[in-house]
Image (cartoon, rainbow over all chains, first blue to last red):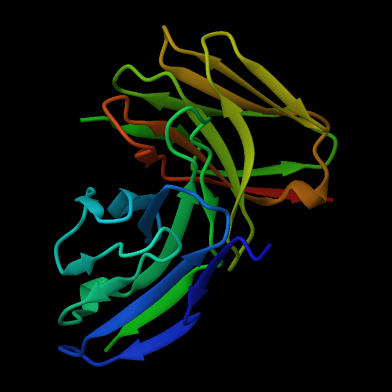
Length: 114
Length: 112
């Protein structure tokens, strides 16, 4: 099993450009989420999904869109990149109801916005 | 709003010593997690604590949860260099889904 796979691992954008971070999991997890990690701030939840067709906002959703058309995939779209979106992004997944809620993380995507 | 605070944020210690990292949270929750992160790497799950009084141990690490005090501890016994990493606690938002709120992380450096 590959677990949680994120692409790309590194990306440099110019202000105003758009892009999509891809996330796929092969563990049949219902729950998927995106976090961003900034120095000294831990991880902050951007968006999450509890199943195909269902998404909701986390703590810091502005400037990001998500969709969940399949159980396996949960892409994160940056609509118009800003320097404040320079960060490391982690996708994480878990079983949903009746589970411990333990999250499994991808390797991360490091984004720099100039 | 759930807030999670860890202390200390930075910890430098010698091999062979014992120390404890503290994780305090502001509102009721029934689930707490500890993760380890090596520089430039992903997060690795260490412990899942699901009830008051829960204690889990793996090697030189032991985690405990006191839901009444809203406090979890991660105790390191006889530290070794390989335990150098950043440790995060994360607390579940009780209202729904697997939404976790993370602490700021504790960067642990163990010197020979």
